[in-house]
Length: 425
Image 1: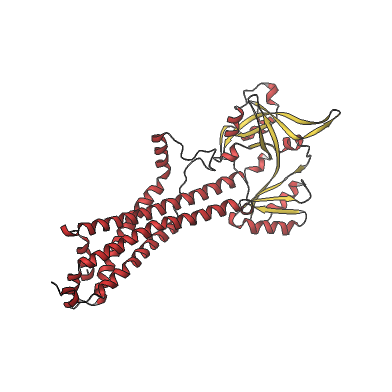
Image 2: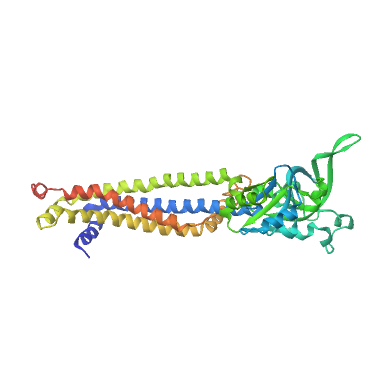
């Protein structure tokens, strides 16, 4: 151990007349620990939000949407085969998108109605958890064992989100009426087209907006109900690397040519993820101020130690210690304070970040509140994902700030004149 480090450690130990200096040192350690822990926890939550949000959005939605400029897509099966033959494409499935009214005995609400092909759709999208029922029962031929009256068994099936089921007061094997806004022409004029559907499943995507607005029916039933024989809205496509979805979308457009056009998930959710990234940067800057405040405490501590130890510095210089040796003593002292605070903060931050879900659940039970109400926020649970690159950046940044905070007091100590310091002793 060098004598500079030895003296630094001795100065950190409180004596009776140095208690106030030691209290400030402990406050500095606490401030740095608080700042580092807060940064790690907040960035872990922001990363968790972004990852969870992306996973949920890309569960219900595909990586790429392919449609025609001229309207509904013709010959979707042939187009899907061409798309699936491309190198970076995993699977493609036809879909129909429309808006409609969904009516039950207990209420009525607007929904986004989507037709899907069960044989290929779930290679591209995921509805999350199927809480009740089965997706296969969208096809009435697969319902032989269902305990429903014969008049209901032949009805086309519908899958609805759990929040939508709550709003309509609908349960598994209830019937719902879909009302199309397009309507049909009759001698009495245009009247809304209505059809009864059997609830064959209730899904939970974990995303309130989707669970409260989406309803799925079989593609063939959607074509019949919306009068689109042989036509679809477009194709949903899954690619191997979701971060190359934009390049794959351009390749698909180039391969198929006009009138086909493609949009990728990054374009469709650009504003949302840009806002999340901006929020993450702003939170990083704001919480870094806590570490800066703690660094000012380090400056205060070292200046007070320099004033307190002026006699010791003069004696060390008269014994042959150079200005560089004196600087090292106080730099070591500040860096030790910073390192201890950073280590405590990193350990506390990681411990909380890794157990955030359990902690938030405990707080909710203790206080009887919901931290993230599903009808207000995109997600209903507090997610957390530790990015070790962020942790390394926080630790390096905190140590850099603490080191810079030691330079001015250390140089002041190094420039002290031994004769002037000992003149009145």
